[in-house]
Image 1 (cartoon, rainbow, N blue to C red):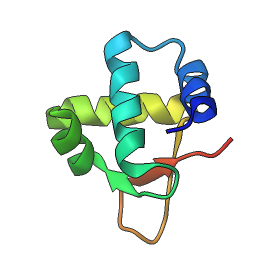
Image 2 (cartoon, rainbow, N blue to C red; image 1 turned 60 degrees about the horizontal axis):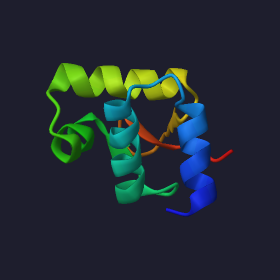
Image 3 (cartoon, helix red, strand yellow; image 1 turned 135 degrees about the vertical axis):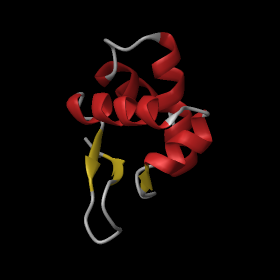
Length: 82
């Protein structure tokens, strides 16, 4: 992850806790801008339960960090390019 991307994700997620910010960066390191992921991938990568993963994804959508994608099945997302 380059410094600009790192700073941008941090700024967009500035209202998040340190733990959530770390989770965002882990997810980005794994998938980048082009990777598509869903709740199960978030659960596995971040070791969250289903409800925690759903809340995490919901928070990222509200913060305009990720966006839903079509053509990959229901509930799939990718990081939003600025």
